Image: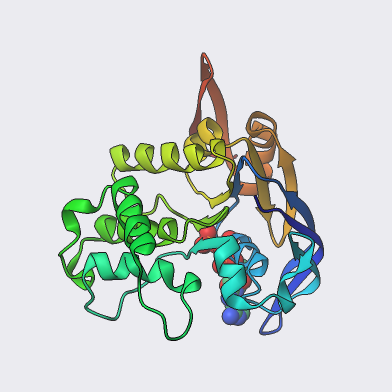
Length: 257
Ligand SMILES: Nc1ncnc2c1ncn2[C@@H]1O[C@H](COP(=O)(O)OP(=O)(O)OP(=O)(O)O)[C@@H](O)[C@H]1O
């Protein structure tokens, strides 16, 4: 189990204040979606939780300051799927997924049987077993996205931060990935996903954070956070929530007039 607590977080990149005064806590067994318009600060918030950008304020993982946690230890606690990563090395898919085991290995140690089993489990869960011998740089965008998800699953960390895990995926694989993220959370993991698909966010997430211009403007149950007034204020769109039982859809009607 892992927990994250952020207090008064600020991030300045270049001369731009990208995040201001963000306070939020994340508990195990919860799937939290981070939503908000382009440039709002969602990826920066994800990166700040992993000490990948300089911050002011406090970010604590398991009540410890992330800035002073050894990187490998933090990587074993929280797996990270970065946004739209480019691949440079022509590794096989299986070896690329195997890189997810690096935080568990000492500088001189080799992949052990337990690591191989974790790699296989991750490939099955991300539906990339059939691609195992392919060269990762030769994959399609959606195939690559699933392989990178498999790499983050191979860590088998109690936490996962996934930045736009649905980007490039076809509708069937989008459902598979959201099912998987929810299953991780149901199994006790702390899961945070940056999402643009508001219907998926509403259907799957236990909680949403709506980020706009560097601050969290709403935090709570998806139906409350995605209220039409919030969507109008933040995205500049008119939208409504259609409910079919417990299965909501966010229907965008157009630009707010
Ligand atoms: N290295 C940097 N230097 C200056 N500004 C930056 C830097 N990195 C990001 N920014 C700016 O910070 C803001 C937030 O970026 P971030 O990537 O967190 O947004 P986002 O909400 O994830 O957006 P998107 O939905 O488009 O991916 C943007 O205005 C971006 O231009």
